[in-house]
Structure formats: structure tokens, C-alpha cells
Length: 276
Ligand SMILES: [Zn+2]
Figure 1 (cartoon, rainbow, N blue to C red):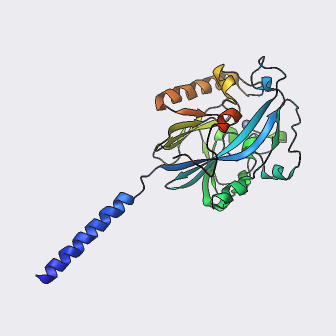
Figure 2 (figure 1 turned 90 degrees about the vertical axis):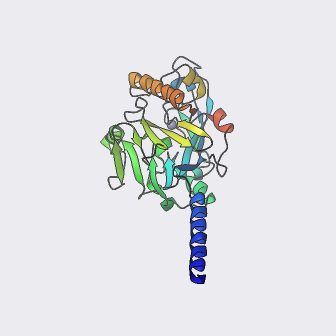
Figure 3 (figure 1 turned 180 degrees about the vertical axis):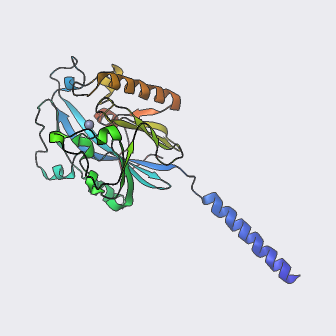
């Protein structure tokens, strides 16, 4: 009897501790999202992004990277302008004075370090597109799986140069992609700014759904008038992608976070604060 009683107590305590452990189990999905400062700049003439509107007006731009903690690992969206710009006292002036003059007040490596992370902790990443203010630090993560549209990967660069190192692990996409197979992080194909431009739908447990714009749109005022920047590779694709984003915002009750919009970023929490 004593033995049986002892056994049942042991069993009971095991059941109780298992139940407690189960209650503590993290729900699979996205846990946190950090906005990292990946650059600050001044655009020389914003009519470049809204042809015919605000000609000759300059505008402060920001450049963000977004770091997502999923229960399965860290995922980085965009890599900003190159960290090497941080060492340039006057920043990097663009060849076209109407474009953006970038500075790097903080490095991406430093932003990760502040969170106790090394680049090798980032197992997967995606870039919205291959302009220099988004792919400046891709090779800081040489072993991270890179998710990119096939159309962007194969888009010839200057002098036909490839856009990525051939040895960088890559998953070439043809359309939308559910990164963790649970609907929490979905790459949306939104071509037009470039041939394989993509945006990101993220579902956070408390904040709710967000669409990270990439450069499908550059600032709130040009989103409102659906302006198509002069440098975009396809006006038709750009307009269709903007409509796709608008439909996604409605369907998912999502917020639109515009990467280069300084006024919007100034209203959001920056790393090391985060969104849950
Ligand atoms: Zn950009």
C-alpha cells in the first residue's frame, strides 16, 4: 500500500509538473519584432518618388531593418545601407543629387550586439529588393538562408554583374511564401519598384498584423496618391502591387509600416524596445 501511495504521489507530481511545463510552452509563431536603425538620409528631390509633385523639395529619409524573433529562430528583413558608411564623416553622397544622401549613425552589427546577438545567430533573412539601401549588409550573414524572388535574383546588375554571391544560400521564390509554414511571416510578391520586389506580412501576437512595405511605397504622402516613382521598372506592376498591399491591409486588418518614412518611424518604438 505504502508503495502504491508513494507511486501515485510521484505520478501526480509528474502530471502536475508536465502540465506546468506545458502551460509555459511558448505558442509557436512570432514573439517579437525589433525596428533597427539601418540608416538616415536626405533625399535631394522627392518628386523623384512622386513625379510632378513637390518638385525640388528635399526630405529626410530613414532606412530600417526589421528583426523578427520567431520560436524557430531569428529572421532579418532588409539589411540597410552598408555598415562601412558609418565610418564616412559626411556619409555617402549619391551620383544623382536628387537621390538620397545616406548616413549610418548606428551600424547593423552594433544594433545586433546591443541585443546580445552575433550575425551567426541570424539563420534566415529576406530583402525587399536589391537597391543598395536594402542589401548593404547581406554578406554579414554568409550562412543565413536568403529568401528572394527569382526575378530579382536573376535581374542583371551593373555590367551584368550578379546581384548576390553565388555561394550565398538562397531560396528563389516565384510569388508569395509562408516562411515558417504557420502563417506568421509571409513574403508578398510586390514587383514594380524592381522586377522581384517583395514586401512582408507579419502577424504579431499583441500588435496584430503589419505589412512592411519595402519600397513598394516610400512615404505616406506618395502612398495616398499612389504615386509611381520615376525609377521604377514597371508602372503597371507597381500599381498592381500597391493594390495587393491595400487589399492585404483590409483583409488582415494590418498596419502599413513604410520603411523610409521618417515621420512614421519617429512615432514607433526603436530597438532595443520591441513589438510583441
Ligand atoms: Zn529604399
